[in-house]
Image (cartoon, rainbow, N blue to C red; front, side):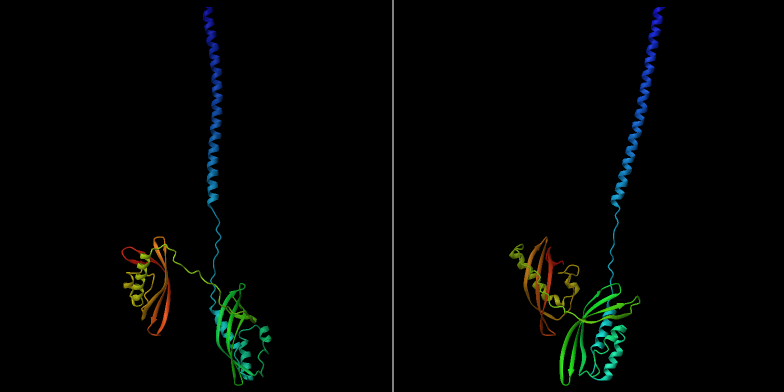
Length: 303
C-alpha cells in the first residue's frame, strides 16, 4: 500500500510540475504574440513612411514663366507718324500752326504746351523728313514704352540745304484698348554703332586627310555649279531633307573660297564661301555656308 501511495504522490507532483511548465509556456506565447504585433506594426509603419517619403520626394512644384510677346507695330507706326509731323515745317506762319495742331494728336497737354514755341513763327529754316529708323522699342513698365529712333532731315535756309541726322528717345503710354500718347519729349540719345565683335575663324585641324578633303572639295564644286538652277527633285540626290532650298536663280558658279574641313563624329563639317556671277545685275555675289556631309555610296549634304 505504501508503495502505491508513493507512486501516486509522485504522479501528483509530476502533474503539478507539468501544470507549472504549461503556465510558463503560455506566458511566452503571449509575449511572442505581442512581439509579432509590434513587428507587424513597425513594418506597416515603415511601409507607410516609405510611400509617404516617395510621394513627398516626387511631387515638385514647378514655376512656369510665360514669355509675353508684345506687338510693337502700333507703337512703331505711331512713333513714325509723330516724327514726321514733329520735324516737318515750312518757314511761314500757316505751316507752323498746322504743325502745332498735328502735335496735339500725339502729346500730353503738358508736353504740347512745352513745345509751343520750339518752332517759332519767324523761323528762317524749313525742314522735311527723308528717313526714320526705329532702333528699339522696350517696355519700361506695364503700360510704358521707350522708343529710340533716328530722324534724317533736309534743312533748307534761303538757298542753302543741309542733311541732318539725329537720334532721340521718347516715352509712350499705351492704355488697355491700345491707344497711345507720348509722355516724354524727344530726348537726345546715342546712335547704335558698329560692334567690334569678331567671330572665331575655323581652321583645318588635321582631322581629315588630304584625299578626303579633295573628294569633299570636288563634290562641293560640282554641287554648287548646278545648284542655282537645280529643281527640288534634282537636289534630293545631293541634299537630305531639304537642308538647302531650291533657289532657281540665273547665277554662274565662279569658285569656292577657302573651304575649311573638319571631322565631326561620323560626319564632315565644312565652312565655305561660294562666289557666283549674277547674270542680271552683272555683279559678283558671295554666299556663305556651314555644311555637314556624310558618305554612303556618294557624298550627301545632311545638314
